[in-house]
Length: 251
Image (cartoon, rainbow, N blue to C red; front, top):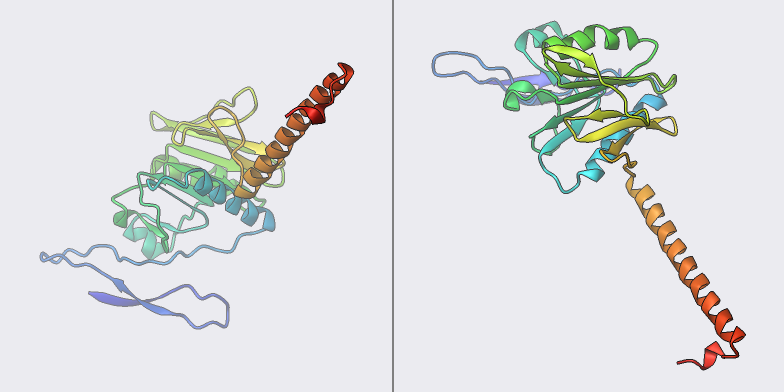
C-alpha cells in the first residue's frame, strides 16, 4: 500500500511537499510500520548548539573516513514504534552514533528499517529549556527503552559535562581520566572539553583534529623541520669556518 505523507514544512508560508511513503502489508494482513519517514525535529536553540553538533559530526566522519560501518547524525528523529508515531512523541538526540550501520545519508532513523539497531552512543546538549528533560525523561528513555550503552550530556555555555554507561540495565556515571576526559568503550575514543568545545580524543588522549587543523599542524611541522635543518646547517658552516675551512668550497 502506498500512502502520500507531507514532509515537515520549511517555513510558515511554505507548502507541504508530498512524497510516497510505503506501508507494507503481509499476505496475512499484518501491517508493518511506514517507510521513508522524514525527521521532525524543532530548530536548535543557539549558535553554540548548532556549531557543537556540526563539530562532533565532522570530526568523527573525518577520523573514520576509511570506515563504512558506522552512522553519526544530529538533531535527526529516531522513530522506534508505531505508538510513538501516533502520539507524535518523537525523540531526536542532539547527536547519536550507531555502530555496525551503513554510512549513508538518511531522512530519519527508523528502528524497523535498520535491523532493530538503536544508537550505541547518545550525546545531548543541555540548555535552560531542555536540561530537566535531558537529565530526566530522556535519560530514562535511553536507559529503559532504547538501552543505549553510553549516554553523555554537555552544556555549551556552562561547560557541565557528564557521561553514563549502561551496567546491569542501570546508568552508572563514567569515571573521568586524570585529564578529565570521559572514555567511550563503544567507540574506543574519549570525549573531553577543549577550548570550551566538546571534542573527540583518541584512546591515548590525543586531540582529534579537524581537516583544517590537521593541515595547519602538518604545515607547522614542516616549517619546524625546515628551521631545524637550517639551524643545523648554519652550525656546521660556522664550525667549518672556525677551522679555517670555507663551507662554500666543499662539494
